[in-house]
Amino acid sequence: MSISMLARSITESPTLKLNEEARKLRERGEDVIHLGIGEPKNKAPITAILAAAAKLSSGDIKYAPSDGSPSLKKAIIRYTEDNYGRLVAPENVVISAGAKYSLFNLFYSLLNPQDEVIILAPYWVSYPEIVRMVNGVPVIVTPEDGTFHPRFEDIENSVTSFTKVIILNSPNNPSGIIYKESFIAEIVDFCERKGIYLIMDDIYHKLVFDHKVVIPAYRYTQNDIENTHIITINGVSKLYGMTGFRVGWVITNRKLAAVLNNIQAQTESCTSIVMQAAAEGALTGMQSVVEELRLTIENNRNVVMQELKTFNGVRVIPPDGTFYCLPDFRAYSNNSVELADFLLRKALVVTVPGKEFGMEGHIRLSFAGSIKDIISGIERIKWALDPNAPNEIYIGDRKLVRDWL
Ligand code: PLP
Image (cartoon, rainbow, N blue to C red; front, side, top):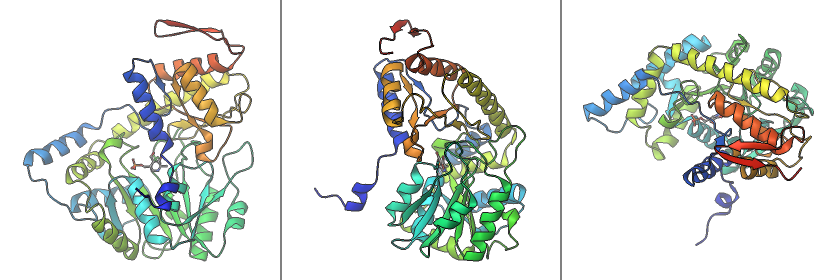
């Protein structure tokens, strides 16, 4: 059997792989704490469940228009008007099976072989892989050591005649930081002048803390939706904790939207009409569910920061949003893959190595889970690494003694 060179070069999703490892350990009865997970614990909003159930009970489950059902588009248009201050037409919206597919479709539609995409480190693991999948070239811009905020000049200096796209994710997975307004304004102005597409991955844009708000990039351009180079990505996965429903969308000009629609029609055909009904239920239902989730996560963030403060040698920049933080563990190891593996084997805690996000020496911790898991998880990590932590710990009713420090 021969597999294509391109397909062989694409790496496994490290986060999905870790989920699988944690699942297997749990199946064996191990008391694993999952601080790697990228999804909140909440139940899906009731309005989403009811809308999906009503659609299912109708028994009329057929193909939908490939770019999305008219009624979900209507809800997305309303969401865009309310949250972005932009009135868009149904022809500007393309709905897909998750924002991840929206991104794949976008890169497939925009990139010729060897076209470059500027990605800011730390970055979401899938960006470079998706770019490579469509024969594009990821160009990583890394911030100064000790910060998660690249400088505009570094981006400008990385642009070549092959640069087609810059992608930004703010608040950012995995660092949790929100990029400065002045920085976004500079990039928007730059992209509009140079004709470079600017993809704003806004999947976490309402999950922000300390009364911060994410200003939409559209605020910094005079161009209308047909002429701006800004492309917006969003979805229900994170805002409503509906990761399993698989609904995401793109807002862009009609010309590009029509191309995305063609690709989608020839690949996924359409997003399941049942899941689209659920997304519509979430978007048109009580929005207090988002605020409840945000408050829970903000509280979790406070607990993580509190716990990490007492961890000798670990430095962390407090996240402004998302449900992740990316502490610097270089006081313990420069090899984050080995470190994450060690933590899983010794302490039964799942973390994600910073190397996967372009930040070696760091470990991504998710605080999307329960407070109990966060506190016990960090206690276990301290036990495994910090010689000042007590050298005995209970995991379930098993007493473990540290004999490696
Ligand atoms: N963008 C970022 C930054 C993410 O972290 C994720 C999921 O982890 C996605 C996009 C994909 O979201 P979806 O579940 O809608 O595919």
